[in-house]
Image 1 (cartoon, rainbow, N blue to C red):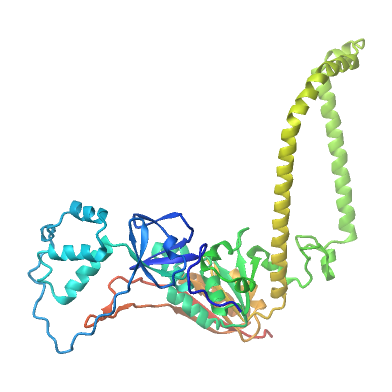
Image 2: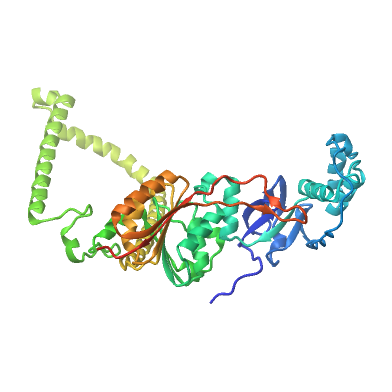
Length: 483
């Protein structure tokens, strides 16, 4: 079993957290990145532990000591000062913006810069202790670039994508993601089916929860699996080996017990008598197809002969009127005269054609190899799905969930949970009605996720002013044996 890495190596993905701002970067030597209008290298991160605090200075990283938490104020202490007579004006700060930028260019440390700002502030000493702490925090956020290096996790990635735009991940909030894992009873050793349109967040959270023990079948739409979106998580190989990917448009093929082997093209059972569209093939249909092919070939030949005759009549009108013209001698002489030039041109273009031919062969070989690997992955996932022993089904997609859930509900084993997420309750209401008609599920629940974040500080504990209105809706049910 591989141990968890606690230090940053070259090529790893790291998450830089500055206050509430989260960004993901890949660590490379001598490669510049941009973060909040500052350009610097990440060479100083290599070999450092996760959770370390750094400060950007002169295009490089300086290791910082994390400030110790201040002691709690006495409960009986009463603040005499207040902020009723303070006015927020630009004249309160005697240092100009040009002077501050000059101090930054001269290499003044962050603590000294904040000290100069405090000394030149006309209202700092008149503020209350809470206001002073808030003012210092605001100035550090504005003038200093200090960040913490974190290892990418499902929670941090969800918060980062949410801050960029909730619509990118179908309004999947971090508490909704946690409830999906809890309702789905995702644990080590289980087989989980995931339909994910949230940039791979649900799939990554399941892989993170299983830890390499179990199986995850991820359904993807189109020709692009989710492995590219899972790269920032830096999962070890034993965790990635538990991931199986299956195209969503091939789900209906699982309803037929006899299917085509994608790898070697063998047919089993009744699949020998079916074509790719699922239609029954008999000897009569084969004879009809042969007759239709022969008819099409005959008609094409007749049409081509008629076209040739019309071309001869239009291009060579003298051939029908004067039979003394010998067209064979004329074409033979023309071919002999142009024979030398054509040979020279072919020799000049021969080397170029050989090079292009080699490139085409290599590209075709790469494409064929990629198709073979993709077919192998699909076949592995198909075998897992045909067992019909899945422990749970998690659906968080931008499509209407009803047809997806109805197609996959029979693959889940009896007495197992099924969880569907959507940012629209109307879609889950329709899905609820269809599942009731399915008669293979019980214990239906349609809930709305609700989260309130609190600020916890001495004598200043209260809900955060800016909060999200909703984190989506969840529909859960339990599978049973159908009568």
